Image 1 (cartoon, rainbow, N blue to C red):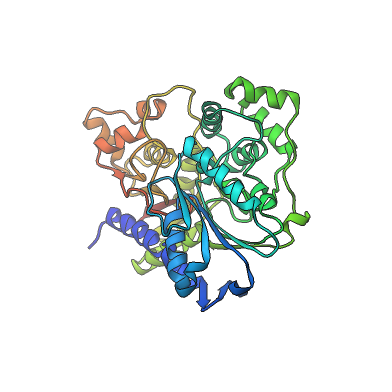
Image 2: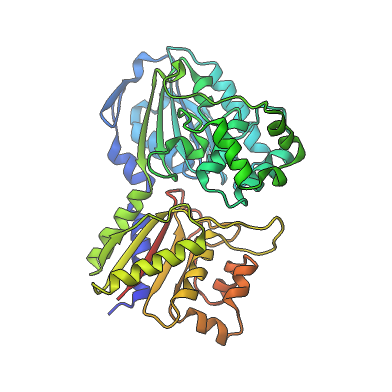
Amino acid sequence: MPTTRQDIIEISEYAFHASRVEKVIEERINFDSESMEVDGHSYDLSTFDRCVLISMGKAAEPMLSSFLRRSGAAAHRFEGVIVAPDPVVIPSKRFVAFHAGHPSPNAASIEAAEEILRLLKELTERDLVIFLISGGGSSLVEQFLADTPLEVIAATHKALVESGAPITAINAVRKHLSSVKGGRLAAAAAPAEQLTIAVSDVPAGRLDALSSGPTIPDESTLEDVGNAVEQYGLMERFPSSVTAQFAAHTLAETPKRGEPIFARSRWSVLLDSSSLEAAAGRRAIELGWHVVVDNTCDDWSADKAATYLVDRLRDLRSAQQRVCLLSSGEVTVMVPHKTSGSGGRNQHFVLEASKLIVGEEITVLSIGSDGVDGNSPAAGGVADGHSMDRAAREGYSVGKALEAFDSYSLLVKLKDVIVTGPTGNNLRDLRILLAP
């Protein structure tokens, strides 16, 4: 009979496989000669002078290749740009590829932004532009409104990521600094017909936070930005030139819903974190587990989320055997300015949970759907009620690993890391807790 640990790995692997980009594009996008249909809306490609594809994010390569493969004989109509965190094979001479930086922008990130803006500004009302957007685009495509050197842009991104702020607050700040975020790519492409096809790694209903919402009416405001800067002490973290922009109140508001630039825009979400948890739930039920989904702790700190979910699992277990508690979304970890530790929010969460379940028949897994957790080579980790004792017997301290933000170094020694490599997908994180 499979162990609880084997089941928890099986559930996570199934969820990843069932939520593949290639699979959902085949199911949701249809072509018939020169006609394209996406979620019930048809486009006659023969009526457009140009058909442009902009694919950006961690899923940029599978989204673009699957789309072009699905388009069949119409593939020759498309031209454009692909920006990905890994080297990609250019699908044809009609595309330009950029191997850009993540989680920090690099020179290619700025070059990609310049090329995309150049291409979009050429478009007219007789053209169609399709944006294939996935998570990670915030750093992969970047250009500040003010003329800013790369090292300052990178330092600003690093300060935001390590601030402990939730992704919506981080992206609100990014959008108001950038010429390619917060609806500003849509502004550059207007008056062309626009379609955004998304693989989302942001909370439901906040598509404007996906890759900092380059094509979406921005829901955040300058007031939100000011609140985030104050709450998370960002003025002390930002480079001086960026701090000066905030102090001088020179930032402009981003495009909002109802503005004319969005009159010819549509948006379609192919996958999000609910897709991941639904697939995990299906497999857990097949394995004989009673499934409960609880996303209450989305954007909570890792320690607070661990306490909440472990307590929730105990409550459920008191009334029901073989409980599987699923939670998607992201937790936060506030990392000091300077740390030499290796890890990420998923592994940090697992270690926090391991302190709470000592001696109990509980197994906990947390994993990033993109296959990358923080600055480590792992996607996440797994722990059970014996992990703390096992670490102590081998001379390691969970508490010290947490204090040093060095979760990977401990979990890899315990053989409790999960390594998938980049998955070509990005649907936020998945946490699974099992109690037989």
